[in-house]
Amino acid sequence: MHVPKGFAVVTPYIFVDGEKYVDFLQAAFNAIEIGRSMAPDGRIANCQLRFDTATIMVSEASEQFPASSSAFYLYVEDADASMERAVKAGAEKIMDAENMPYGDRQGGVRDPSGNIWWVSERLSVEPYF
Image (cartoon, rainbow, N blue to C red; front, side):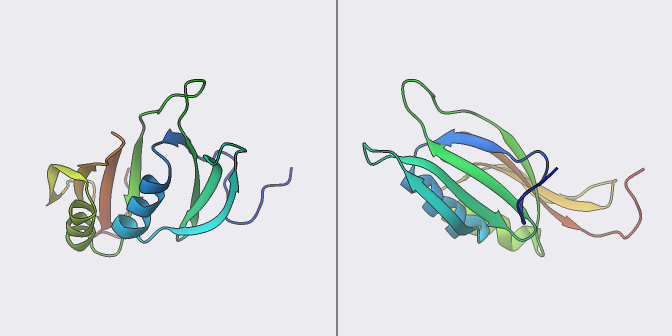
């Protein structure tokens, strides 16, 4: 089986509000756009964004493919700083960053398209379970 570099066997793919959402991901989480194709009507048909070792794909929502709502667990170097950046970029804080019993410092935001991002910094080198 061939999986493109930077992708996983299962890669998140969401339908969103287009260009503004790509801008949000770049400002909030330092996502890097690695590819894009446009539909004939000028909408984003597919945009690939890399988050360190993971990639997601987004398409601009339409009547045929309405906006989807998802939840993501994003590991970052500094949960507090990442939460602050996300809120400044337009996310709504839904949970302050706190140290969790499973070894992560985690907070949560809802992005402008309604997706939830659990922003987590790994504090422990111990496995989860």
